[in-house]
Length: 142
Image (cartoon, rainbow, N blue to C red; front, side, top):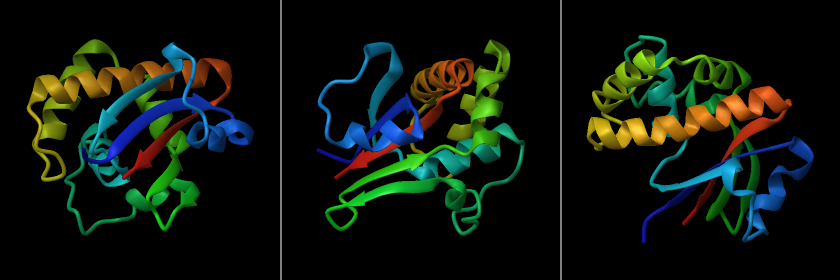
């Protein structure tokens, strides 16, 4: 089955509700698998044209954990505001380059088209979060 990875936008007050809800407004979430703050930290490094190493956990630690349930089987993380801001400003050319750079890290094993699809959804949600004064979150479930 793999690790579920849902991206969604919300306010801090309602963010934990995602764990209990089986419905979320369609344009305000995207569902994938096997993405954690580790993979997202590699994306962040790629966006900033920095070399990424798994042992450099400072970026991964920037993702605040708002929920840790069932001994880590369900987690909710808030994207760092600086990361959301960078995501929201990606134009189509930069998005394509970033997806390619992301696939060159050791963090993911997808090909560029798959990485670009994920990144397009994350960028769409980052723009919606920024436009509405909300935040972007990642829900993981084993």
